[in-house]
Image 1: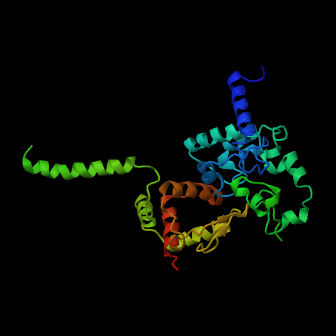
Image 2: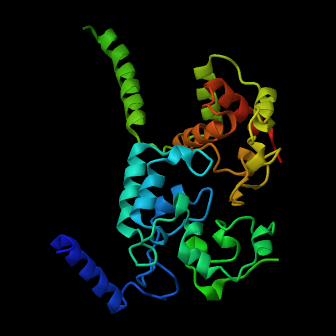
Length: 163
Length: 139
């Protein structure tokens, strides 16, 4: 048995929920790779989108997120420390929604979403010069082009690459 | 206990109870920037200096970033995060009424950003200096 029974039942329930269409008002997105767009909690939005767009937890596996959450005082060059209670609350939610889909299961180098194979593949038509535009600045600046990224929506229809 | 001492004790007990309730109130208790400045000044035990605050805010302190790198030299309008490019609302309370109304939030950001800029936490006196300068910025 690959997983404990309760985990399997949980997954089955989620799969059924997703299949029923209940969790898919618009089915826009890369979402969590399982076809569901998980709404971001207010706490996650408040704490994790102060300096950057709120990255959906589904974009990396739990192991990558856990390393990030355990090292917030050294967060990609800045101090993003939080009180222990908040770290615990956010980690629990992130773990529940981290990526499990086969392409997202890989732990990217430096735990950077932008270093995952699927990210690189999805953006291979974007030239190096485009990434360097002042209006974009960095591949981590999703919302520069994905205009609804702050809502966890990465639907290609909403992509506008700025000059 | 005579009647006089009872009447003198009661208001004090009430005051103590009120303080206790305030201490137990949710962490997000709203305060004013002036109240936070008074708190930092009392902790520092010395008056705040807006000029010193401006100096601290705009100086790189030998590192890569100053506070101004993300907040602008005079933070009366939105700034831009130096590495992510995300917009950051104005810091001066007169231009952004949300600023310095949540003590936990104020402490969180002083802790993080002082470590980013000065590689250490700021003292109560330094926080008082910065806040007093921000409060001098008016439309």
